[in-house]
Image (cartoon, rainbow, N blue to C red; front, side):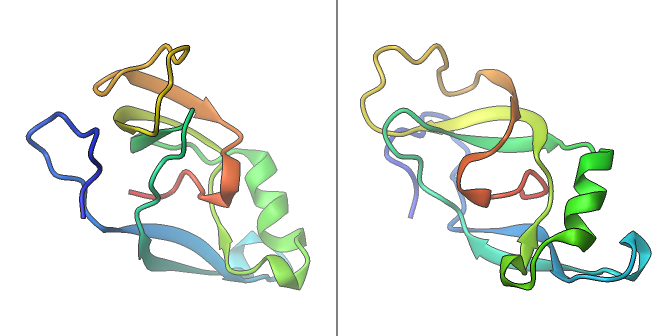
Length: 117
């Protein structure tokens, strides 16, 4: 399915690839990292869906990859990035973004991980 608010000719896919740490290790090199396929989330009211263009790896990511408790795995990777708004959820009169806006983000809600398509 596609998002009703999509106005571009590009259709939003129903699934996306996500980079996850599936098992911790004693250090970053020994962590088990995999690509998983997951449903594309639909934004709730006041949220936007961003097509990620770039997502950096920073030192805070490293610690989380191999220090998190076992119940956090698989752990979606990435906390920040930049991209393009492709969908807006619900009625958002105060939201300053529109479909097509270029945005940067940090601290993703819901643990989606920025290393996602």
